[in-house]
Length: 73
Image (tube, rainbow, N blue to C red; front, side, top):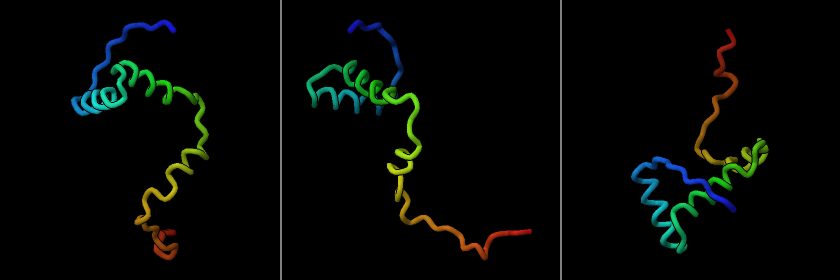
């Protein structure tokens, strides 16, 4: 695998979290970022069904108004 040096700007929190993960796994920060990009870019056409399934029930306290409350004017 060839690599191209690329500069990115991270927030303080992102940098701290990436550094901690890299230290925990014993790899470089660059490796953590490459892995994250690989996961992000893996699927060029994400399946909306998977996204819906992954977020189903994410707001269990959400309320939906009764149809009688809808403005049908």
